[in-house]
Image (cartoon, rainbow, N blue to C red; front, side):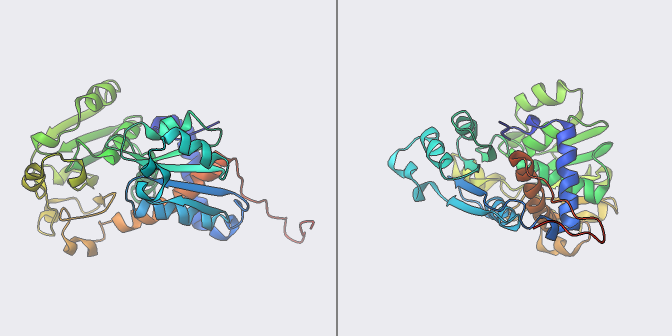
Length: 317
């Protein structure tokens, strides 16, 4: 049984297969419109979500399957005290695959250990977000044309940003990646990410506090919001929330072929004026998320693209 809890649960070969399949779905979506007919996805979202939950649901529907689930813990038996393990065991009786988001790190892993259907980690606390990572990889590959030999800047909340942690973990497996980590001291990448991933994989990285000084050398700029929900102290959030704001004026310092990514939602960290810049890819990035989740679910469920009959022949009924 294959689950996706951590980005490294997939080999680089498997990731390439998923990205290639996603590209084929983009090119010919009609060919995949019934591959998951009769299959059910359960979206167990204990934490609010727009893009991730809806893209999972749209992905399964576009594959011809159906969706059940809940969009908050209050709408489930968790509000009565039911454990993640018990909820997963029950849902297993009703669905073929689970996508789970939870505020506690490790919750999707607990679910995966207790069921015999695939479980996808759709974000666990400030830990990891592997399907956003696949979305990011597809975006970079489609828009930059490669996944190696890139200088990528991560800017904003690098301490609690699970999308940042996941993407660093994955990109460190590719060659020629230089990481530029842009954040205030209080929101730096955790030591375990630096020690266990960057240093261990001999990845080049630097930590800076000033975005403007490094903009001119970045191939990719990955902006993130300062996450209010991860702070215990409101005063700290207010003090740090507007540390970095990407504006049209600042983009004059950037490369003409810079790719601007953001996992969204955006608050103040990217000015609305930037949206019209052709280098701004975050809304397109969200669209890529649906296609890569379609490909991922197909792989985990063992589904294949229907074979087309040779020209002049018809398939048997």
